[in-house]
Length: 266
Image 1: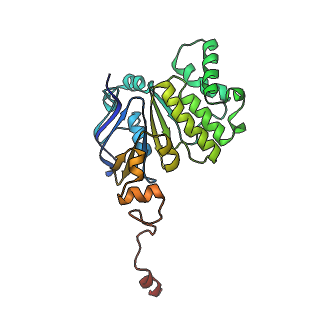
Image 2: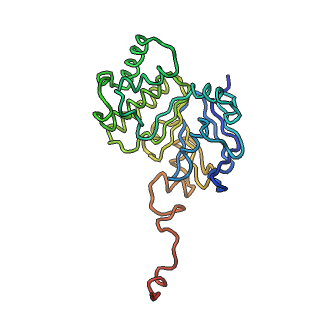
Image 3: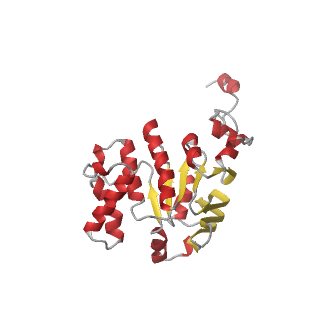
């Protein structure tokens, strides 16, 4: 069995002739938590879409369990996706389904399990995220942190070997953020899964990640363990990690000379 369950090899991707990624190389080892970080618009979420086969690379390959994703037919793509769980940004729960039915949804759609077994499995997944007692509630009755935990229970419903998280900490209060942070790490280890986290939240991500890739200007600008990157002297990484307002990513948008612009007559 290969050590890397997901491999991105010399990948380029763009929209309408504009390259978003240029020769990206990444590996995601089995059993590890790996983060993809970078500024807004750097193409982090797009990498998750490429891994899931929603879009095709312009050049290069994404391999999942040794299979080239973009070379699969419809059945092949669905087979690869059965290995994957996805926590969407802000949870993306079905608002007209109860907590129980949200978690049961992938089981009912993708398996032939009897309802009695589905019931036991749903309660097991909800118990793992601390919300077994909330199984009858509807999504509008949940707090933001609770909704994110229900979405996490749904993401692990079929015991995936790959769990992808798109901005899992966005919009959460500090307590909920700490809960989700701990769950990502503990569930990854309990399931023996590989977790891929897309995030720009440095503190929370660095607490749980084994390895981090920084994406900037379409390339992997830096990579390493959180400890290594905290000590990095690379200007972009240092600015991002320490939240400095000015650096390679400038505070001011490109503009003409300020004094000259003020002196111009209408």
